[in-house]
Image 1: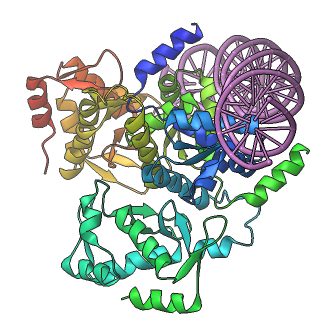
Image 2: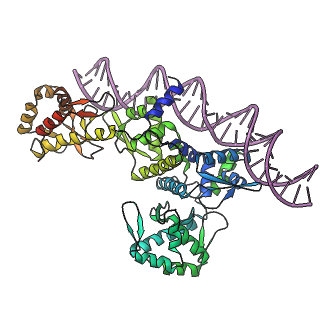
Length: 239
Length: 239
DNA sequence: GCGACGCTTCGGTCCGGGCCGAAACATCGG
DNA sequence: CCGATGTTTCGGCCCGGACCGAAGCGTCGC
């Protein structure tokens, strides 16, 4: 049997979407490093991503072209720089799901790194808050009847809406957008669900605006000030 | 810069778990087909997965060893067969996330197909009946005192022997063989035990001989006729 | 005991693709 | 215009790994 004949036979057997292309993207170390770096939610240039991946400019360009072709990242040309970002929160959600499995099975990176505790405490997951702080938001809202879980959705209750509004977030503005308001996202460090979607993004944005915390200049860490930590815990009490 | 030096530099930059190994598993077409086949929730043998993947037994064995080492699938040795299933619902969730992205961007493959419900209703498990029908045989015999369960054996009672004989099965012939008469086999679609062993094989053979059902020309499906379905339910009433 | 069957291991082949250096292209500042 | 800088494209090297056939085990059935 020729390779072409076998390939077509296999293709006929397939059921469901073709997950091979996406898996191959994550399966390469250089591309995995790029995607992990982009999980911080910031747009990075080709050169920066080449350094993150540990490869030369030529190899990086090839990788970025493939990632864009598959639809995992988006390109924005600005002057002589090419900026790249994740294509959407669905990509971030998928990457976190993979990372969760990897962490569960003990496939941790060679060196935990000095920033690892900070990352577990609070980090950016694409555009919302993850880590202990992210889970706290979810638990606080859930524990006080802030939302109700249906089969596959989260719906805010009146009480939950009031608490969100008290933080200065305009819910009507968020709901006008096509993007889902509430989504769950599995946390690889806490192995718990936290809040994603436009509301999750708005909450992170509000926390930064209120200066409760600042984003680290590089990476995904979110650093709370002492006063900000206190205000955050008051805003999202447990039980 | 040497490869080793670059690798350590990259390791220092890395944040979070290593997603590369899992991505590489999904990235190979043969392994992706295996995982997709296992997404149905049933346990499949190495040979069946080799056919699903479109590769030989040797290549399939290699793939299954790697998938098991990474923790995506679990192995259950049963006789000379090796059954494989997904390691857990988290694996399924991750695969669904990847498949969702693939479907959103790429093109859909063949849909699950009409055979799937038939397989869950009645299918061949090595040489005996599994699925809803297989479980029904076990439940009917057990519920009416057809056999008694000891620590590790199943023994037919006189009442059970009479019911088997009434179907036209020569029990003395079966017992003359060295193969165990009764065995239990875990059903992966029903998650229940059903009847295996030489009696289980004889029952399936009898059902085919009596033309209550026919085996599908391909695959494992067992298709009951309307009259055969009625006769089957009369022969194995519940409670 | 024997052969048949399913799965794994071993040895070897071969192809895809990841990488780099060099050159081409694009953009900016002067 | 010019060189400097960022990115892509091209040509070629090379290694990892996917694959198969054959041999080695273990299990089943007679």
